[in-house]
Length: 194
Image (cartoon, rainbow, N blue to C red):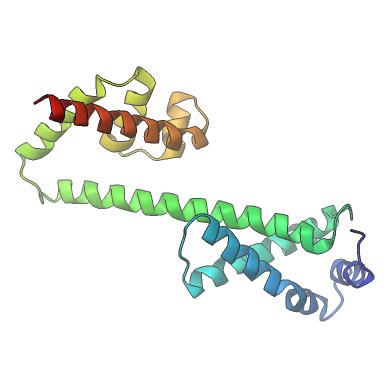
């Protein structure tokens, strides 16, 4: 779909920093940006508050104006401007949703660590639990066991684990999921055998 004159004009006005051009741009594309955020959150089964949605929208618009409208300068006109902006907005939104999810996971880890450090558990329980976990890890392939150990026992996040083990950060989650499934299956086998 060719670039429409109204969009070409709007890009030119923004790049020339005409007064009111940015406001016109935001007015024209705000609905699209909000739609992309809602769609990306829904696709990932994430519930966002109005404040979260506004924060992500602001981040998207800031990215568009960053480095003297670099996003608009890179636009080649190979697609419509709304399609191009949808791709840009979706990438930013997905990164933000992933970051929020990791922070929630890390918050859970910090809360667990704080409970242990504050003595909210019986002193013998963490030792027994750690010994049980170590025994269970013996049933896993070495790499899966190491990822589980780093995540659940050493409280490291995906980035730290990826760096330490020399694996892509985005492969840590699938490795953890596979290891957890194996551990569940092993636990069920032990239960049914006893």
